Image 1 (tube, rainbow, N blue to C red):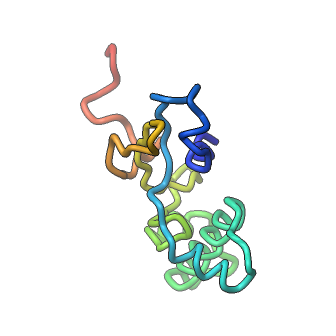
Image 2: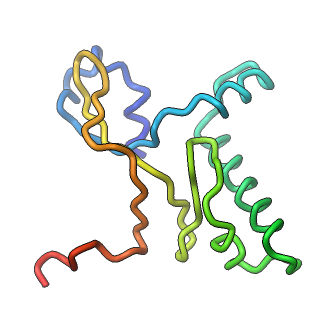
Length: 130
């Protein structure tokens, strides 16, 4: 996804100058613990797997049902994931805060603060054109 732009060196990616993308705000807690345990930086997949297990554990603590019904994951609410707060939407999508960053030769510039946008929620103020 476009969050991979955050890994690019803006000074060497001049063709992307002015480009904007959404990415989770930087976190170091999970990254540091992972690196201490495995000696390397975690991949994005490692973070997604951590979030999935954390959500499942939270759902298991809240619901006595076994096996857990799918709606138990939604009912788990927000948890501290690898890349910040995360929750599961009613449509089964992991929803987390994203900030908008702009590529500049001097580095990444935050242009919109991190906020959660759930694709299952209708836009505020109605649908454009309606």
